[in-house]
Length: 141
Image 1 (cartoon, rainbow, N blue to C red):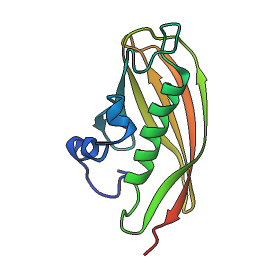
Image 2 (cartoon, one colour):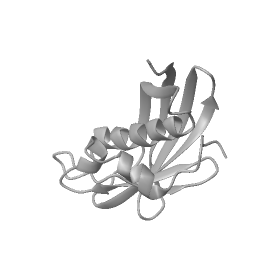
Image 3 (cartoon, rainbow, N blue to C red):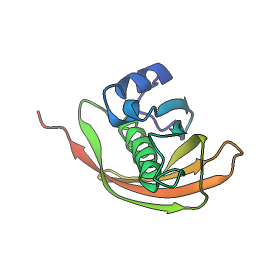
Image 4 (cartoon, one colour):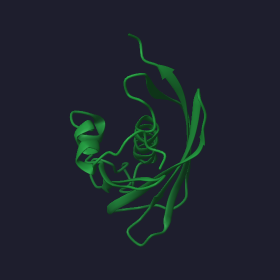
């Protein structure tokens, strides 16, 4: 297990209250040995003007899952992770339903982490593939 401690789904979703995640109805659904899974609706909140999932919304889901995942691997009293960059390839359009994001670490160093986040439609087809780089910073006392 890569997580600093055991977290419940309820705890993780509570962390997301009063944030963009709550506004977009992004839900954390599952956490296992090295993967954090969440979903996001494809509806009026996340559509672009032509009725498909906005690429930026894909990035919001990816960065949210990767950033949350990275922070859950750290001692929250001493460190926090902040995003440095994100690169997303949009593979398949989605018009409705929910997309499922799966975030896994590629590299977990002392000062940086790199996460891969893939999103899938309701048929299990790949819709986007992202890499998120994060910097690990000490918390200021």
